[in-house]
Amino acid sequence: MTAQTFPNPVSLIDVSTYLPGEPISAEYYAQFADSDELRDNLMFRAPRFRHHVSPDETAVDMVERAAAGLVERHGQDVVSGADVLITHTQLPDMPFYGSGGAIAHRLGMKPNWVIDLHNGGCAAFVLGLALARTLLASGAGRTALIAVAQNAAGQIFDQPTIRPRAQAAVPGDGAAVGLAELSDSSPILDVECRTYGEFAGDMTIAVDPPRKWWQAGQGEGCIGFTESKITKVLARGNRQVPEVCYAVCDRIGMRPRDIDLLVSNQPNRVFLRNWRDALELPPERHVDTFDECGNLFAAGIPINLDRAITDGRVNVGDTVLMGAFAHAGDFAGAAAVRWGGRSR
Image 1 (cartoon, rainbow, N blue to C red):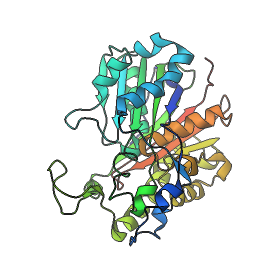
Image 2 (image 1 turned 60 degrees about the vertical axis):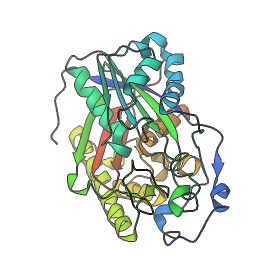
Image 3 (image 1 turned 60 degrees about the horizontal axis):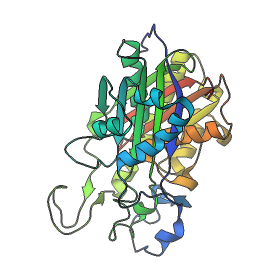
Image 4 (image 1 turned 180 degrees about the horizontal axis):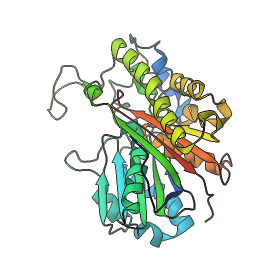
């Protein structure tokens, strides 16, 4: 992907987030732990805590709660008056359509564009930034909301026959909403998105006995991990995230080691460490909430960015680099923003 010229700059001016319920400790899963051939795999070293959606909590509920911070800081009119709504839900409340229409209604919006993303996976927020930047710069409107919800931890991974598995203790739930506008106050400097279609079929749902996801039957579904698949995913993730990050840094004229803050998705501690090493960054310049929140999937980047802003780890003028890969490595993306401050 080559650099695109945008005569009208687009900025990510704020992000607001939501974590459902009280933190759930690793001991919760330890009581259910069963023999699992993947128990000792580095991919599944459990975080200390994570959050779960409640049984009656929808993805739309989560996004509405995440948007509350934007409403408080910028006013209801800014949120409800956004021209573009871009959404991603890890586990759609209804399989035949996305959450975009319901989210727009709940937030009081009448946007010109409502777009549901699914292929972006854990990199969906970066993909949403790329899309918002393109649409706003082309004249589609002045403001855009990018809403992501990760809601699989408390629904898929807490099923009675799934929670004893090693993979169950890693995911956490959360939601986030980013606000982009046509301005140069906190500009999106560059975005790199890459699709690796040859890997698109490598993430599967495992059900015993086997059936299609929509068919009734015995057995609860989870992600179909094997040692061979894990080895491939580790190799792809270790390569793809640094590659897209280096591509962005090259185009904005910075070395990765010179960026002020790296914000990535956080599948596990192995990836977090390897990405820091590849970009030659010390731990203090890489946001890491894995032990507090687990693997947040697509919500990881915006939740970690919000945490860094709130904790004062991002100063006005800092360059923030976001990077992630999705699923079994079929998509990866990176974006750089020159932070303009949370002024409102």
